[in-house]
Length: 238
Image (cartoon, rainbow, N blue to C red; front, side, top):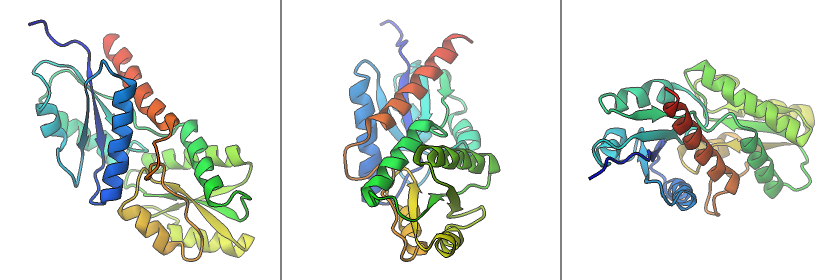
């Protein structure tokens, strides 16, 4: 039997206990698989859910090269540390870039805001999970700047954990300055942080996450496929 040379695409999400979040992420990966019919596409998780990274890698044929595409919006601890540790000992593994920052994510955020409030009234606050790695927070700030350029209005970034300003504070400040505020949701799918964003935002409406119970946006599928293809190209040049 000839060795398998086409790298598999192992999409690794953070993981969530939310059934809605699990379904939304699975739908994205199914759409990626449909876009790449000649590629083995699997879904695994870095935390919370199974299969984890090691089990996902172990399920693939021996000797098959693998590109791990982090379904994470910035390159924080999970991308820089966890994925490297959890894939150590497996030959032929390449870790692709995180999904963000990317202008297509800003486009998706703008589309979600338009669904929430077509007239775009109110100050805009971008809800971000937050990371202990400030490089990841900076990635999110870049997306905030992209969104501001996309909608032609200032965007304040508010963090749900690990960084300042916290979302509740950012929303309160925005309401005080502009009278009303709306929250753009820079979270991949429903889950703990989405619920927290809704709670701490008070009366300010919160847009849907990038993935929800609707069909995954083609642009999000494009980003995953692009990350995979770029990693394949880079691995061939080594």
